[in-house]
Length: 317
Length: 204
Image (tube, rainbow over all chains, first blue to last red; front, side):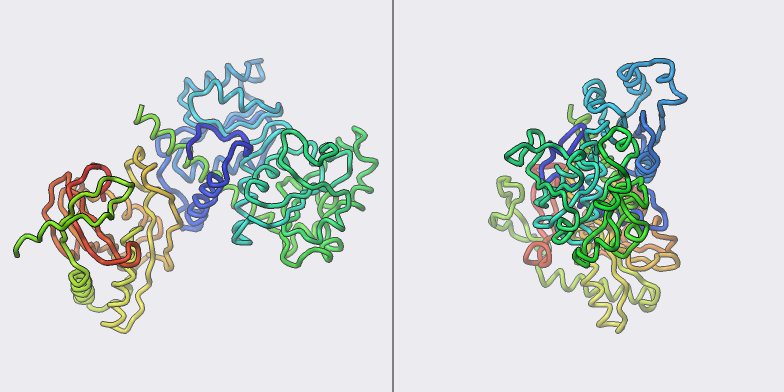
């Protein structure tokens, strides 16, 4: 992989995504061993800089770095100098002076990881920025689908829910379309991006739009539900959660119309009973738990590929 | 034994490099005989094949391990468990990793605890690949012993590592390049030596 940072998937080539998937397969095998630790990042320091709450992503990155024998430092906004008013750039300068090789950042402001990447000599991995991007989630979703179907090209995916405010959806739209998956976005019109009259919005690859989930699930190989945040109702974008459940919840009744081998995915955290029913979340078609396990493998692959590339650059220069 | 003749270049050089003159060390028949002898030695030293497991180091150790397994089946009528190790994650030459190519999953079909592991590689040179493989093996359990089988020992060890079974000892200069070609990976069996124009290329 010939890059310093992983900020979004819009600048990834298909063969780069293939390389991540193939490396993640090797990492899955490492995770199945009695001793789940390999040495390639010995002596490297990975800093997890989380300005926004996160359970699975932060733990996933922490385990991934530790499984590769890196030293891991976790910094959260609360309890750090950020509370005393330190700016993002000053925090980055400090982290760099303390010897960080790779910084994993989550921030509520879209674009924050790009600013960090400009100021850090080491690598930056975007672990979610505002409504913008969550590339490692999209890569683990691609890896999970690929493991189940053995291919990506030619599959049909439906992403249902609050697309407009979802960084997971945006990165997945890029990743899926680059790998030849046809993407349909489904949800109430207030929560979908405005694609304009030609069905194509600047800044997004071509996708289809549907307001009818019962119709959309019929041809879907992948059904990805997104979390509905309760604030959306307060903000006037949803008449009521009850109406959303009635029209857009992924549940067993609706899945009777879907292909029997369709995959049910959710990036978490789930609001069970809202965007997905408990039965659908735990049913035979659900790969939601696998997504979590695969998240560690994919993040190990990314840390490894970045570190391998960076050490090469350092020696060569 | 008379020195083998310098063969005319056959245009097999990798990476589009200018083909170098190659000298044949082992022919296809020589490779077969060497493996047959190693199989006999394995059976003799271990008094059978009970608790053995064969682990080939990728890429060319893997097909060699597979062939040894077939020969052990002929000799003893027992199917010895077979695995493959990808040692990239254990290599100490981080800077050269970019040259290592795509890593893949290791395949270890049984727990190695209490087993006698026969580690198989094509060439032993500095010993660093074997060191990496030993580290990998220990992450799968505690084998009762590890024995090393190689087709070629070309000397120049940098670590205290010695093979238990050797197809052929080949005295080499450091800057020479020993290439093992196998039917499974390269179309035909042969081992050749050439003057290297890439000091890293042949390190094994």
